[in-house]
Length: 204
Image (cartoon, rainbow, N blue to C red; front, side):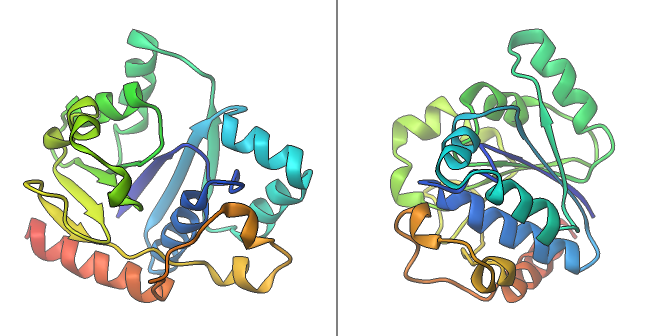
């Protein structure tokens, strides 16, 4: 499958555990043979904060240790220019995944864009931080599926458990900088394989 993750950051992990969880999940999906792309806004807050804390090491780590991920950035934009850019991004992919924390306007555009063969998913690593006002503001009811460790009330969901990539566990990365991590971390490869199986069953 051709999958694009739209993230607040995959490099900027300081006070942002989502970066660690997402790159673990994305890498394991790539290992299974999927074509994985990850995009984030250029010079975003999470990246800037991380580089101030760790220097260039965090960026180097991702580019050197996660070669299966196609990582790119885009210039900040809004309105019609953002929709035009997004339309190009999703034109040839199978799944567009907006990850909790990416900006609200982009999330809503992904929820509302439509193309035959495209599945629009919203990935929630911290469902406890998602309240009713967030569900409404992000228009989550318009997504085809919600990916989360636990089901989100009234929304169609598939279970995806947070995990850490082996590269982040064995290399010189200070995981404490990410903030509190989940107490229920799964094996990254197992989580990706379970998602692939359950997703295939849902769309068949």
